[in-house]
Image 1 (tube, rainbow, N blue to C red):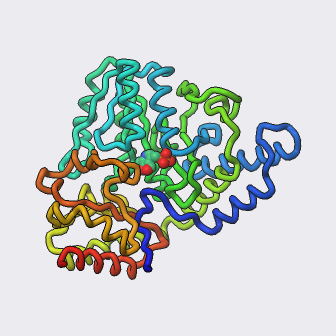
Image 2: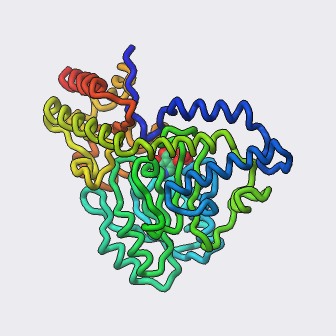
Image 3: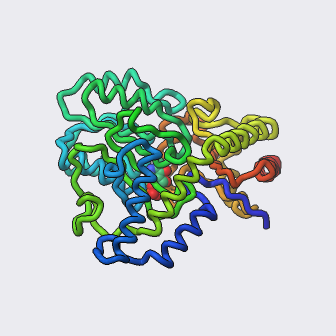
Length: 382
Ligand SMILES: Cc1ncc(COP(=O)(O)O)c(C=O)c1O
């Protein structure tokens, strides 16, 4: 059976270079980086080189990169510690953040009784910057703003620089979940004054279970996990050296190929949109998917003109034809609830129709697009 993987926003295929790098480290670098003997020193050196490599791509210092198990842990570390240790008593966020952020904020609200405000979104789900400025100007609380760079469900891109500058103007801390943007966009944190960011390796052809928090110097963050003195005391536990080395390798290759792969994937996304528009009258693109400047090139969220009785069978039919894609995001696929993101931005009418997220990488082809559009058309017409 033909197999098509259009779910790279859930996770990506590892690059062969990354597999080679990880295998090599697993074979030869089994020392504990905290050990002082030669095996340990060698593993430590690998770890620190990975940290330097990663820091270089974000234009930050290596000391500001704290390795974690992935995006969720980094988001939780930042949000928890901002409230618990940095005196934050108010958080401004949006209702379309990833659950790693939304639920961490809810927890802070319950445990620490902080104030939470959600910024207004326009009809495409883009942040209303005037409202954000209004919220920021109107407070005596120490405030953390948490807004994601690229939305994992609809692909909306935040103007991260403008947001960071607004936060700076009003003296707020700024955390951005950059899980869907690092490795796909240039992020220069010397240019963009964010205080914190969360990153996951498996979104840019790296391994699962590795990620990092960018924590700007002197922000006063404290650990979530207690134990050894790893990660400058901010994240105890023996580092997964092979996964971290694989993450650094994956990030290096992603940035080496950024221009070429961005052009290739953008072309693929545009082609997908054209084919869907031609073959499936009434199709709509959710979020800002119609506007390439405000929507990531890696993702297309599609609202299909299918009656709800038939919609139940759609993902099943796609799966039967070897097509991997998502309804909402991967972390909700086991949930019976609809997408919290689409609930915020779609009309009641469109919420009754099925929406599917297709997300891409440079491993995809136009031939795969043709195949998927053909399967969709047959299902809709049938
Ligand atoms: C925007 C966003 N934030 C956070 C996460 C969680 O990252 P991880 O799976 O590495 O914990 C994801 C993963 O789907 C994501 O897309």
